Amino acid sequence: MDTNINEVLYRLNEKGHEAYIVGGAVRDILLGKIPYDFDITTSATPDEVIAIFSDHGMYLTGLKHGTVSVIYDKKVIEITTFRKDGHYRDSRHPDEVYFTKDVTLDLKRRDFTINTFLMDKDEKIYDLLKAKEDLDKKLIRTVGEPKKRFEEDALRILRAIRFKAELGFKIEEATAYMIHKLKDGLHKISKERVATEFIKTLKASYPEVLEEYHDVYAGLIKYHYTDKLKETNDNMIKLALLFKDDPSDLNKLFLSKKDYKTIMPLIQYQNFKDDDLSYIFTKVDNDRYISYIKILKDIDLSDKYQDIKDYIVTTDTLAISSLELMALGYKGKALGNIKKELIAMILQKKLKNDHLSIMTYLKEVL
Image 1: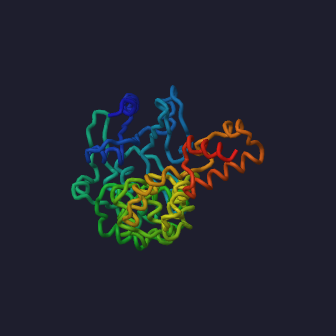
Image 2 (image 1 turned 90 degrees about the vertical axis):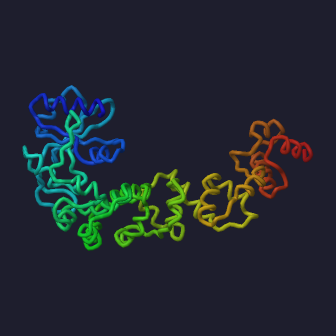
């Protein structure tokens, strides 16, 4: 167990409070995986948690839901009081929460049975809702009635799909039925949260769930599933494959500018002519483009790239510097013009992009 997590549990216990690791971290431990995120649930009230960890920095933005985020070694550990949820009016958050001393009541408000395991500071695991049966069957099932769980928080629909993609589990029949039936509730969820779940699902080991549950995402994000996703671990290539026919909804994924500028040229130049490759390779991530075309069209551009790599050039990769050109007498507008001339000649394969070839040419024309 992480030493910081163990200390948090110990300090809460020392003050007379119950405290456990809860949820996905315990599930992953039972599956033999290394957990990365730890959530703590405790009988201590938020005020008591704040007092116990007053020697640490903390964030209190989740206080109204009973969560105190304590900072340990620059990492944030969320500590949440046992609670019952009130009515959900916005299909996302409860209007009110009620603190309780009964951890079983806290577990009964959670999303899926496989996320209800508890672990104490001595690494003893508790299964109060018989979740081990579902874990052994590799089954994703809601805690209680799926209709109620999904109407409370529609994001749970996408979380179920994502867990299936990450774990390779089956979604229990009644739970799966309600996922399809109540999918319209997802329109109440923020676009950012939808995008986050979509990307996590795409990155997972079993992205084929995006085909199985295409109807769920259809009203949110337009994409075309392909089994070719399984042929790469490169998420930029996966996104290019999904949106190759219509990239318009890529902007719904809140990608960074860098990622967007990486993906779009792959799609833009997926239909190419050999004569254009020298130019195309100035616009794309070369290794990624070669991999993308191999997966998409089963065409290996590696040899062609080797044949033309000396004729691939941009202003930034021109094998002669501006200072050298200025020393040869090119200044002002003439400097810009000679750069354009050299680049055009290289792309037309009339000149190689190496320093000796360029200098030889310039001495001939001077």
